[in-house]
Image 1 (cartoon, one colour):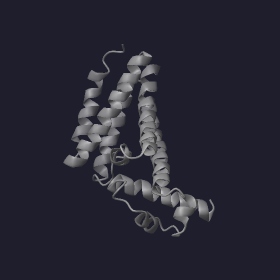
Image 2 (cartoon, helix red, strand yellow):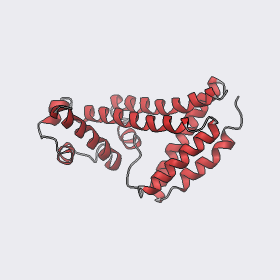
Image 3 (cartoon, rainbow, N blue to C red):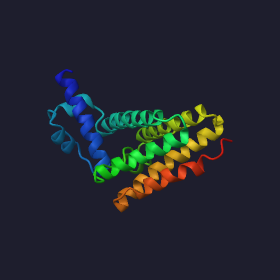
Image 4 (spheres, rainbow, N blue to C red):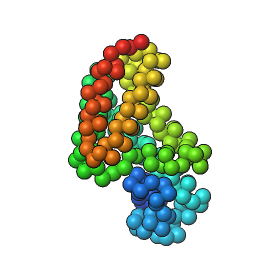
Length: 191
């Protein structure tokens, strides 16, 4: 990796982490540059459109990382109920092990920017559709109808996202564990 590519990667990774922790508006470009260790001029070299462009690439990086984790988690078990429960339980364990020090990957940017930036709104929407699609695919492979699988994919993702937000406010993973326990009830009908 060249020095230019390395500084771009550092900027995106740092921005992604800071957006999760502090939100879009709470994170400044000077802070991103300083914490990334990238040369000061590299920010506008790599992101001539500024913070919004950097946020777009940050969302893409985060979305790709989370989608990979979901996909790998869902492959662990053939049965969708067991696979989804285990995935959520693993998320709950990871949340507790990290002592609640990381934000919800896309939510902070989505909540802060959806009404002011159509570009970022669409990027967040795309990320969420990717996550939902992974659950949908798993359910369709198990025999759920396309329509029911899509509905459940949205519901499962929404439950997980909401549980993460609740977990951050309470400082524990109880909400995530409750969602995991509720999966068999939710998935009891294929049509």
